[in-house]
Amino acid sequence: MTIDAQRIRERLKVGSAYISALDRVVATDEEKWLTDLDTHLKAERIYEVLSQIMLDICTHIVANSEITPPMSYAECMLKLATLGVFPIDQARLYSGFIKMRNLVVHQYSEIDYSTLLESLKGLKVAFLTFRTHLIRFLAGK
Image (cartoon, rainbow, N blue to C red; front, side):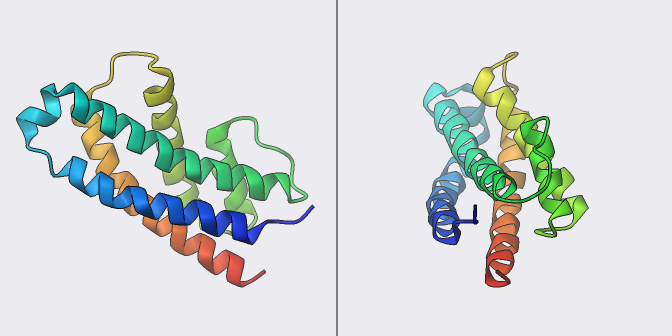
């Protein structure tokens, strides 16, 4: 099997479109951010989609490599570091966003929207860095 670079680029492009939506949600005033259901739903969905794009790309690359499959979604990012896609410190950071994604998607407990706001801000930077690493990785293929 081979890595489908075009598929990865398309997923990154979709993610980039969500970044502008993320910027608008993050700019919401604090009181509305903490109390408005529509804002919460937008924030959760943006978080879910961006982190899922990262995860989809990760699983695609790992599935098309010769390394052993990860035991968890969070571990998948560590596998990409093993493949040289990005440094291990970045992989650990991305794994944290995947863990937060699980909390948002599965709602294991009530979501702390102050924490989600901070995580969204970090996710923006992480996604843009992830995209840069992936573009470099694909260019080397």
